[in-house]
Structure formats: C-alpha cells, structure tokens
Amino acid sequence: MLVDPLAAFFRPDLEGEPALHLEITRVEVDLLPPLARIAVTRTFINPGDEAIEAVLTLPAAQPDEVTYGLTVTVDGAAYRATAQPRRGAARDHEAATAEGRLSILHERLAGDVQLVSIAGVAPMSMVGVRIESVRPLERLADGLATLVIPLSADPRRTNRGLADADRLLTTRRMHPATITVTMKGLDVTLPGRDGGLVVPGQSTPIDCAAPVMLHIAAQSVGGLDLTTHHVGERDGWEAGIEAPQETIAGGLEPVVDVSGLGGRRDWIVGRATSGGVSIRVVAPSPLAGGAELSPQARAMAAFAAAHLIDSASPVTPAALRLAANILDRTASLAFVGSGDRALDRMPHLRKVALPQTPGAWTAPPYPDGPVRDTPRPNLPEKPGETTPGSSSARPRQRPPAWNLARWLLEGSTPALILLWGLGATVWAPFPLEPVTIGMFVAILLNAAVHFPRGDGGARARGRLPLLLILALPFLASLISGPFGLISRDLDAVATSRVIVFQWVCIGVAAALPLVLMVVMRGARRFTLDIGVLGLGLAFFSVSVAIITLSPGD
Image (cartoon, rainbow, N blue to C red):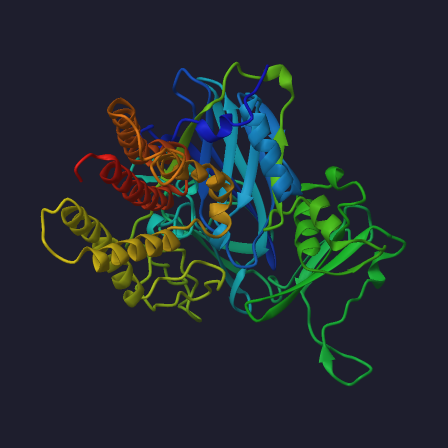
C-alpha cells in the first residue's frame, strides 16, 4: 500500500467525535512489603463501523512509581509493548498508523501523565489495556501502611501543558470495577466496604471513579519490612527496609550485603528513599533472560533497575532500564504489528474517557486512628495549597496574578483588532499608529503564551513548519504589487487584474489559518495567532497596492 508521508498531518480531528467509554476496570494488587505490584486493566469496545486509533490519557504516575509493563489485548490476542528510545518509538508508531497497521505506544508526558495510543482497532473489537507498575507502600508507623491507587483525575489540573489530542477526558458514565489483593501475613481493609477485611485472591467491587485506598496492617512485628523469595536461586529476589549499619569509617550508612546470593552472577541491587525510609531490592538482572522471570521478579527487577546502585556484572544503566521495560522520559513502551493485518486506510482518532472523579472525595481515616496525615489522591487544589506527598514534577497551580494577566491579554487583543479595523476603514477618527503597534504586540504576546511547550507539545512542534504557508499571501501580495515585480504604468485592464489578485490574497490570508487549525492539533491557538499576524501583514500589503494602483487616489 502506498502511503502519503504527510497523511499523519491531515488525520481526522478528535473534536466532534463521541468519546469511547470503559466497559470494566480490574485492579490487581500484589503486596510485597515494603513494595506493592499493581496491575490495572481497562477494557473498552470500538462500537463504530470504522477502524480507529484509541487515545487513552491516564492519571499521573504516583511518587516513586515505576511503570514497567503494557499489554494490550484485542479480541483475545495479547500484544506486549517493549521499551524503546522515545523518539524512535513515536516515529515508528506514526509510520505504522499511516500504513494502517496495528500499533501501540505508551508515553509519559508532562507532569508524569501517561498516554496510551492504540491504532488499528477494527470495528466492534474489544480492547483491554493492562498497565503494570511497582511502588513503595506509604508507611504510617511500624506495622501500618496505606496504598492509594487513583483510577481517574481532575482534567483541570491534569491537562495543563498537554496538547489537545493528549488531554484527559472524563465522563459521568460509570462502569463495573473490581479489585483483587494478594498478600501473606497482612490484614488489608478497603474503607467503605461492609465486612472490613479483604479476602486474599477474591475480587471485590469498587467505585470505578474514586481513588482506591487500602489500609494495611502487619500481623507480626516487622511484617512490612521484608519480603523474600529464594534469594540465592535463579528468579529469586528480596525487598526490604535497609537498616543502617556501622561502617569502617565509623559513620552510619546503609550497606549492600549480597553474601546470601551464593554463586549467582545475575543479580542487581537498587536502593530508593521513600517516605523517610531506605528500601533495598535485590533482583535478577533483566539482561539475563528477563522475559522468563515471574511477574513478581519482573517487578522487582524493574524497581532495582530504576534505582540501580550495584550489579554482579558490568552493565550500562540505560541498557538495563530498557531491558527492564521501564517507561520514563527517555523511553516509551511500543509495539508495531506486521503488515498482514493492515487496514486499507488510516484509522480515525477516538478518545477514551475515564470516569469523573468525585470532587468531594477525602482519604478515609485509618481504622486504628490516624498516625499521621495520609496521602491524598491527585485532586484539584486551591491556588497555593500543597498536597501532602505531591511531587514537584507535577504541574503547579498558576498564581492568580498570572491568570488575570492572561485574561487581560486575551481580552484586549480582539478589542485592539476591532479598533484597528475601524480606524483603517476610517469609521472611527483616532490616531492609527499606536493602535497598530499595540495590536501587533498583543498578537505576538498571545503567540508566545500559546506556543506548545513541554513533552505534551512535542508532536505539535513537529507540525509547526506547516505554518510557513501563512506567509504566502503576504509574499504573493508584495511581489505582485507595485513595489514588487509589477510596474505602476499599467493599462486599465492589467491594473484591474492586479487589484483582483490582491483581493484574492487577502481572502486566502483569512482562510488559511482556519484550514490549518484542522490539522494543527495541540497548537490551534498558536496557529490562530500567527494567522492573524499574517492577515494583518497581508492587509497592509494589499491596501498599499490597491491605493497605489487605483487611479485618482
């Protein structure tokens, strides 16, 4: 199949297309103190009669969370994405999408927001998106901990800095959701559920929109400090709180003790500080047959690779992170299918909506009484308010002064354009020069404000060269005018034709921004600002040309 290399720029837009809704959400939690392995599977259906590219924006990753797995199931067939350099993964995804092949891309955007794109979903196909991650428990005291799993987020906070097509979309439509918890030696409570304790391995219904909070209590002393599995054998691992030990220098520092690994030469060690405690993980190296590791070992290997401090054999941290399938700012998870299932045309973009998070949700108190403030989910904040446990990498609330300045700028620009139009057409007698200068300054400031920034605007910035087209009407008017290649001494017929062409230039300058806005996803406001600037320049050129060529003026 022949593919137009520019086809990706002219794809159908998300606006006006109805959102897809989730059919069911399944949450699986494997408690491995001091860590937890989490897998969330979201299922939806393509109900239409056309192939689509489903775009799913997910809540921001939690502090110290390591995402290491994406498996997409389409009509029962499972496709596992693998970590690849970010730029190459995005390029391959766009190329495969243009060719109509099945393609999956999982990216981490600004503010640690996650985006999953699945292209080539056939009509009436059922799609399951399973994301695996591992992160520390939130310890409250010895033997007490919590785990918060947000299933959705507030769009007003999440969408700052994201392109239009990447933004989180929510819906009030609810759907069934369940959670299954696996643990040993722990008592787990799900607040709001009758019966109190969670039964290990049993699915429990939950609210699909509200964040999930688990209250965890150890049945014995030190039950939240260490979890092991045949450390000295292949596929064995250990995760635990690392107690300070006295070193030769006399200081108190954590030390790495791998004496229990025997003859193993495939281990790696990672250490991370979370919640004021140091967590050490010994795990099999994913470079030594990582695909054959058990689910728990893969999670431990990902956590250790993300926080690597030692390895049994020389290893490059970047190569280790790719082998561990870790999603971060440098690598995306991707899968590109073969051409045997290629579609005959490019799929339509469709957004998948998450359930709307209840705005009044607050973290339930621990059953035995609050030991300290429990972490809150990613909910809307008042300006200047700080969420406990929040990460500095998340988008911050804009101060009121900035919001007021931006509102004044965006409101004054159309007012200045209207005044300039009245003055230019002699409908209102006032000095035109200061209004003209103010109008162009306001347009340029608006363009600077609306310029696509951050990771979320990377795709939009790749389309910015298309905006060079907006300069063509001004250049055509200038070149075909009396100050360009056209002589001022023309007969009446030639002069009339030049004037008609000048009017055509002004019409094209007005229409081009509207046309380009269809394909400039993520940079539409910037396109409009540049288009108004080009229209103003074309108006000046056309006005000078017509006045100069008009007889008697």
